[in-house]
Amino acid sequence: MDFRAHMPVNHIFSIGQAPLIFSFHMSGFGCARMTYSLTRRETVNGEPGKAIISFTPDSRCETETLLGQHYRVFNIYISPSHLYSQLGEELDIVPRAFRPALEGSGTFPYIRSSAMTVQTRVILDQIFNCPYQGRLRSMHLEYKSMELIIRQLYEAQGSEVKVRQSTLCPSDIERIREAERILTNDLKNPPTLEEMARQIGINTTKLKKGFREVFGTTAYALLREERLKRADRLLREDHMSITEIAHYLGFSDTSHFIREFSKHFGTTPGRFSRSYSR
Image 1 (cartoon, rainbow, N blue to C red):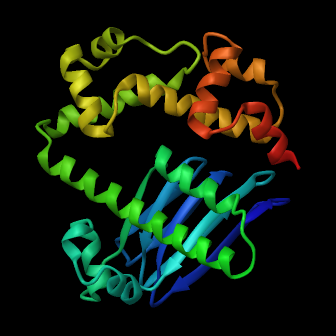
Image 2 (cartoon, helix red, strand yellow):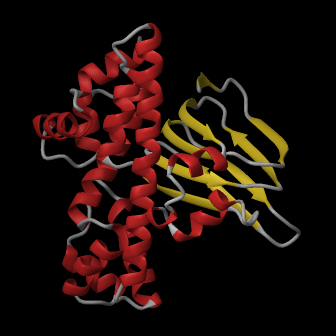
């Protein structure tokens, strides 16, 4: 999907036999509200840099798009039975909570939302910039789409294992999540580890360990990822210059921003902006 919303739209529909959906959000903010029963509801937020796996049978869905947003979303739809056969029925290689969807043993919903990793972004770039034509193009897109599915299942399973092996108690995990909110609240002047640890009431050693356990990365790497995600959005909106974006997001200078952006996205901010505006 690639469109600009010229008016806000709410769309309500029912889902019976659901496909598995692997969704990748490049730009645009919106949400989907899922209702499974009188008591079970869930909201899924779509925003730039998000990857979402969903399976929502026997549900009611209300989607909301916002005025003026440019939506670029890549979705892969695949039937549970087809993916099950592709995996050769080896369900130990996928997340435990995801297995009932593949086995057809229940209608319990599954939704996982996470930040797109560098590896995922590279595969998406190879899809969007496919150099082939005809049958070669079709084969390339099919194989790369399956690679995206494999990548998402691999990352989901890895996160599930980390959660099971976590040595943090629930209150510590909530503190680490609060530290992440504090860290990304002001990207221009982020707090130090010592300041964050003091605000949430734990020591810096536990804070560092907590970031790795909860988010699978360091606080600095998470801050860098958030800055680049915001840069992606600002470049697409085309309201600020590259120098202004670098200053606004807290990069030491424009050259630093260009280096980090190029390393992450494989192209310079200038080329990225020009290709997007064409």
